[in-house]
Image (cartoon, rainbow, N blue to C red; front, side):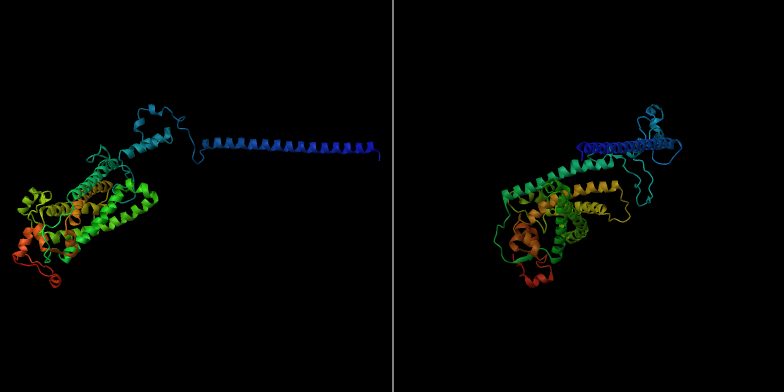
Length: 411
């Protein structure tokens, strides 16, 4: 075949392919242009429809720029007196009138019965001034009292009480008997008295530990164990606190009735107080079954602070029937409960110290119920003398006389 003929055929095929490809590109471009024009027309039509829709009163949320709609509305003389509906007409989205009412303590509508929830429609409490707070809303006033007074000063009081006990123990040590034990026992506490005391003591320890963790745990426990574990711990202790509270209340009543007879003040208590109970001099001051210090704990701690702690705790637990539990009621109860419990813990720390490591034989007396004659004579000489004179039986419970050798009644 002629080479020139072949080359001509190749050129012809290439030229025809180029024409076909160019035609295809032209058609595609025309189609794309047509589609773009149609889409643009559709978008324009949609915008026109959207623009005309509000004018036609179409339903739906309409956006608006608060700065371009009645920007000078605040120049109106009645601007500050507008309600939320009036303000919405000139400045959509401006809910200042509503929040101004909320901040002023205005009560709104609530479907809850007023007898059970009188402040259900009230978001922010009115202004009050609790002792130690500024004149502000009640919730903020409660927060100031708790965070600025009860937590820091209450914690300081407990630390001071603990430090004072530690220093006293370091300087004096355990108060030991001066004489030799005789082996003859006197029943100091009956089984009923010990059961009442230990029930109250265990409930108190549960309440004290859980209360300390809930009030101050975030300062010295949470940073160590983390948020999650501390949350579980606080939740568990809160429930323990709520269940131990009623037990403490009932046992406190039993303790008061059980030990009332021997805790009436006497003239000998004045001498005991003036001499400080012989704590510093080392010389025992004669006293009856309970000395003046124990009587102070009984009347001021068990009765006085006990009633306040139990009453406020029952309010916080919502266990008092017929009481309407408003926020202000709970705030006041919480503040009273916090102050009273701190004072009670500080006082009972001293009581626990003297009943354990502070005095030889004191813990075994409450655990077993008996003390040696020497212990009774040195620490409660007037009570010992009454036993020797036969005014008080040495063994007061029936089972004690069968298991313990009676104390001697000889002088």
